[in-house]
Image (cartoon, rainbow, N blue to C red; front, side):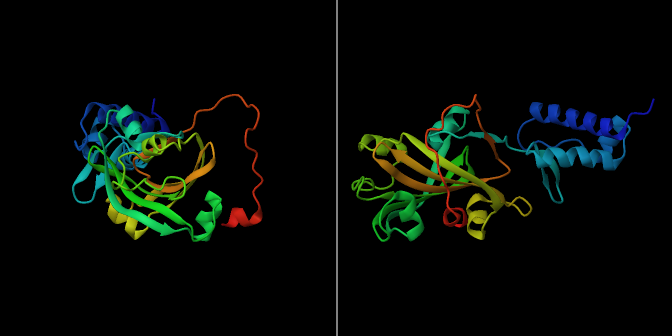
Length: 251
């Protein structure tokens, strides 16, 4: 009995997913011709299976060379934790390259987010965060100088959250807004993104300490290496109801 084409595609995809789990990062998969002969299917069926695994980050294509096992995708759980803690919990070695560390005046938009006046001085950091040597995200953050004047006295701290805790401004909760978009030329260069892989996940975060907003940050995560893990539980009381105005939505 002839197998339906959809079943054939699923069979090839399952085989390649299992094979990728056994091989190492950067190892090649069998050629289209070899897969066609092994499963008795057309090249279109093989390409459909490979396309699906490229799309979900299991495999990567290199023009003129072939298809290879991709570095593993990281589940990014939305919680107040440091990049280093997240990467080490997954058995990866984090690293940070600081692009800027200094003071800047607050723009009107950032001032509104931090509930300060436009022009107030802010600590500003821009960093590239990496794991096992691979750039993962470009992060920018702003913190009111009035809250922690000495934050950058010794340069950029290895962990901003840890530094805030040590200075008596411990982050306690936050709000994240996630969007997807195309990487800018600046982000493409810093993240080493290839043509056709320029999708990034953007996270806009407002972090709170007991006294109120303490940090505003944005991060652009490479879409081929991150997925979002959102823990769910039964509905309960809304702790911080927010009424967004039309102005806030369009900001």
